[in-house]
Amino acid sequence: MATSESQESPSPSSLKKNLKNRHLLMISLGGSIGTGLFIGIAAPLSTVGPLGTIIAYLMAGSIMLATMLCLGELSCAFPHAGSFQHYALMFIPNPIWSYTIGWLYWLSWVLSMAADLTAAAMIAHQVFPAIPIYLFSLLILTVITCVHLTSVRAFGESEYWFSTIKVLAIIAFICIGIYLLCQEYNQTHVLPTLKTEHGWFPNGFLSIFVCMTIVTYSFQGVELIGNAAGEAQSPQAVLPKIITGVAFRIILFYVLAIAVLALVYPYGTEHTEISPFIWVFNKAGISFASYGMLFVIFCAAISAANSAIYASSRMLWSMAQDNLAPKYFSDVNKRGVPTKGILFIALIALVSLFSKYIAAEKLYIYLVASTGQVGCFAWIVIAWCQYRFRKGVNTGQYPKEMIKFRSPLFPWLAIISIIANTVIIMGVWFDESGYFILLSEVVLIVIILISYFFYKKRNLEKSR
Image 1 (spheres, one colour):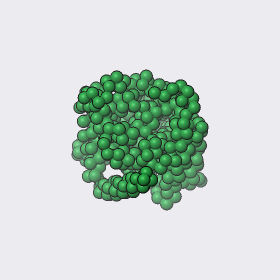
Image 2 (image 1 turned 90 degrees about the vertical axis):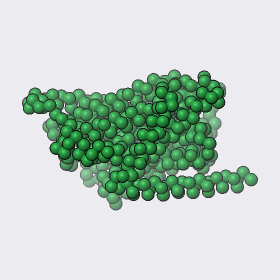
Image 3 (image 1 turned 180 degrees about the vertical axis):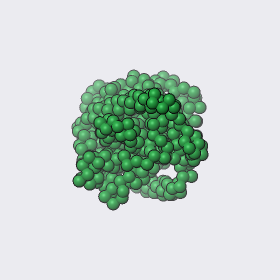
Image 4 (image 1 turned 30 degrees about the horizontal axis):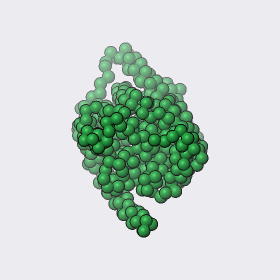
């Protein structure tokens, strides 16, 4: 157990516990409310229709809740900034699993960061069309990198206010949407329906599973609370309340917002706005609200990129601590910030500048699709590690006192999470571009596995 003295004078590779409880609350609540909801919602609405979209988000939200309960048990027992990558090293015998999920998850956050930078730049370009999208991406990347180089508290404070803006905006949209629906009913005396002219599910019920990767991507980021636990002041005391409360709130926000959107947004609508949310306000003639929503989506994109650089830098730090990445990434400055990792990640995120050569909308979709699959894989690892931990407790391998927060329905919660996420990963392979995604995943995993064997060989040579 660390003494108070060691906490005051951390080692050169020690992170500081400077995140407050309110930071944890808004990081976990706002971490999953990003561009996937405000921009990515257009794809499932056009693919599976209004009812199918609601069902898809309910299913993804339930899977997210199951995974979060599993993560809550692990994070309270073993608070660590590396979260499930470190747990994989603890509970899965071969370190190749920890190495693979760590680098895959790190890369997914870096690509997610590039996607969110592209989304934010697209919005800024609408307001200032004379400035190219790629220059906006560079400017935003520079600003949030400077924030992270300052301190973890600077990240926590900025994310607190970004998340507050997003949550208030969703509540406002739900209220305004309900008002518009009531107004429409008073004028027409016809209740809106989720049924399209092609039936309840225009492309069949099974099409829901094909779009589940994009839908699940909207919720991904909530597991960031596991990373933040390693830099929280009192994780065991606050995490159980935050995880259970936040998971239900996120499902409530998403489902209510999407239900309202689905009722007022006709299936098959073609529009030039960046988000269906903005289309709704413009259609209603509330121009000031549509501009406000544009600002909210801009904040959501920056917030998501802000979370991405935090998650990927801490994952890189954790892997370096576990000797699965170059050791110099474990170094931190006197403020407890892993500066080398942050700068390296910012360099990789410059892929967002490709919007100079690729249409920004297409670049965003490509980047989102590439990260959604990895998020599902990460959730599988979380559930499996929780299963192994609880089984170890039940067999006496770990003392029962280690369980500070007990996830319910063991072992079914973990099993359902593993099966559901596996189905989602496989479901996207049956999409039109599924073969390309599958091929990309296979190539990426092969590259990571080859790098693992080279890295292991180099470590063996060093130890001789």
